[in-house]
Image (cartoon, rainbow, N blue to C red):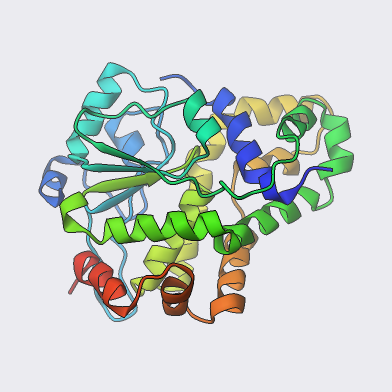
Length: 300
């Protein structure tokens, strides 16, 4: 049976093969988009449809999360020369890669020169259990129906999302990410995984929650990944269904569901109680560090 400890990494390995080849002062030259809209699509970079500015959202007390400081994305591969030139419009200083070493080896980031690269392996401590198993099941739809249907694949993702909070490697990686994002000298920065929806999804949700963005807005931002990722895998989904597979299975794998992020929030609250204690106790980012993030990101 597929183990939850590797389901996210396995997904990333499989989706990599299916993906198509292809400073705040900089934001004035960028398209003016509503919060959560795809910069990748707006800039015509087909490889990163889930590239989005983290900013633009309002907090509960009426502040606004500043744009042009942090971006979230899918992986920067495969990028054409023209794609890299378009990416330069973000004036990035830092690239935080949340993928595993095997993912990075298979598809290293292609980013503009001068951008500082940081590998933050969120799933380094996840137990390995035959990563090819999930990929094999997706090529055997009827067998997948038995092993992944009736909510089984969703349960695996739910457990995986809990590990974004519980794994030591996840705590270490997210600590480094958030401390770096609080450093104005390293901004603008982008953080990403493979499709920008799971490891990246929790990173964005945790940051926005700490900044005071209402949970319903955080969840809506999380769910927007479906708008940008699922179309990339439509052929794979259709092929799976044509082979006798249940459509819900690949949709659950290639997309996101509210219960996934709810699992991360539940694990965080169960262990630490509040987002502030998660940052202080799990990530070792004290009140001063949290204030640095708020001071940098929030605008009244």
